[in-house]
Image 1 (cartoon, rainbow over the protein chains, first blue to last red):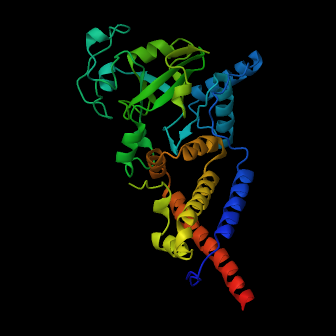
Image 2 (image 1 turned 90 degrees about the vertical axis):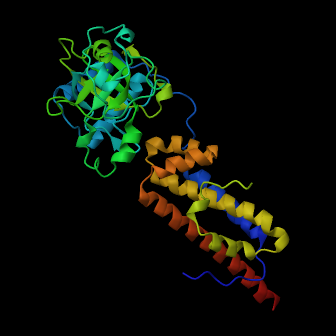
Length: 244
Length: 113
């Protein structure tokens, strides 16, 4: 398309008119979209509704199912309302291999190799393994606390992992996630520390000893079945362990 | 040092300059401000349209922050189709503005004759 030939002078007033018109159109189209500043206040969810949400999460976790998109979105919305902050199974078009699955107890050294046995106050019996974690060595400032809650997911199974390996590795590293044990109603804010699992066919997630203990993921009721979601705005989620 | 705006990389500089040259020299600075405001609105419209409703508020917050580095970093994570759409729509916006300005200008010339 060839631009029309330039006239002697254009009218500044007309440009002003165009600008005003476009501003009006913009505010009309996006009047409902206000920058989010206020934190979402947890709604007082009735007990029956809470029970229903946890039952749904527990059923999905125990059956290792992949929910249909609509159902998953609805469930995420319900969980977000219950928690008071947003959780989601996809973030910036990226997702985990699954949101529901069984968690394997991993040694802390495969997730955070610079940890010292003396640092591990909460789980002294954790086995030591030499070897670099798949997301690389963490700087001392990144993982200062060996008892932090670290999670692994076998991201290698993602369809386009091998095409976007470098970008993904950077993006997923230390990403904040929310792990929910729906059976004991415990949630833990965790960080993704590794993208490989020793036994990916049997387990969907791996957890550091501190995480396994704090989330009670292997309680007689939970039997390792958990749900994991992204936290789009991690600053709104209270870190650590929460009894829901 | 002139600050580079986050959406400036998505339209042709020569096309933009053609429109600016159409204004009288003493009006060009004011015209540039208005033109950039229109293009920013167009860019924000496109990006908000392409964003899922659930995240629109966050994107709107980011775009209205005017933080060039943060917006550029965010844009680099978006799909190529979004940045392509942005490029195409911004150039189309410039052409539309130019056509509107030229139509008014030529009708003024006709009336004077």
